[in-house]
Amino acid sequence: MPNRNYWLSLLVMIGGWGVSLPANGQALIPYNVQLNSAELEKQGLSLAQEAAQLAQFQQYELALPRARLATQLAPKSYQSWLLLGGLYLQTNKFTEAVAPLQQAKSLDPKNPAILFALGSANFGQEQYQAAVDNILAGLTLKPNDPEALFDLGNSYYKLNRLAEAISQYDKAVAGNKKFWPAINNIGLIKYEQGDTPGAIASWQNALKIDKQAAEPQLAIAVALYAQGDLQRGLAAGVAALKIDSRYGDLEFLKQNLWGTRLLDDTKKLLAAPRIRSTLQELPASPPAVNPAPTP
Image (cartoon, rainbow, N blue to C red; front, side, top):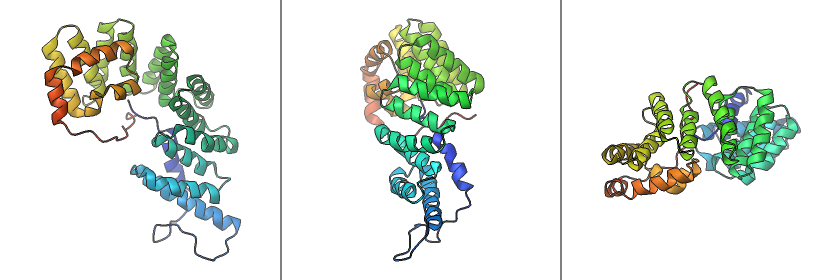
């Protein structure tokens, strides 16, 4: 299930500020040179641009100090604060993300990207009702945003408001037919509700969109194995883990909203000798950020 990256749209905006980076790429303020506020702000925006470029290549630890300095040099720029908050989100520092995102909101209270990012931070803090409130506020400004609707569905799911969760997932798919994670999560809910055929159908539909999606493939494997179709379940499980071995980690699955029933059945599949040997042979997958579905 991909991470939500609403703030990444800022990369395009930053690129359009017309701020030229220094030739050495470091954007350092010259020693002992007196700069006025306009020049300081220009330096800050230049640093923000450099941080954004680093973020595009997932160089978050290099981007963070530049983004922090950018907020000091250009404190009235909501973009700098949003970028800093977004970088914290990307590194799973959800508590640290809130303050810069709140500052961005104070500077631009009607920006839906900021509200959506705040919702992501709330979700990461397990403050699911706050996530719902911020995402709904953003949707009043930018209705029918598929990624926001997906996040809203996830928040409702964590609040056990399952019918509302499915409704938001359906809306997300209506806005983006290729948004397989929403279809996948409908399957997660159906499985917890005891509707195994319906869950499998959802996961198969997700795989029709992305044949290399490990999550729905492993979920199908678990369901087949639990039903007694051992060979097909094992084959599908091996194929899924070869795509992404992180799905052999129950904690990772829990983070991806797998419910109690599905996790219990997953334990049985992962305990099979063929699956254990497969995981031992596979290198650990890097903690890469999954791309968002293609619009």
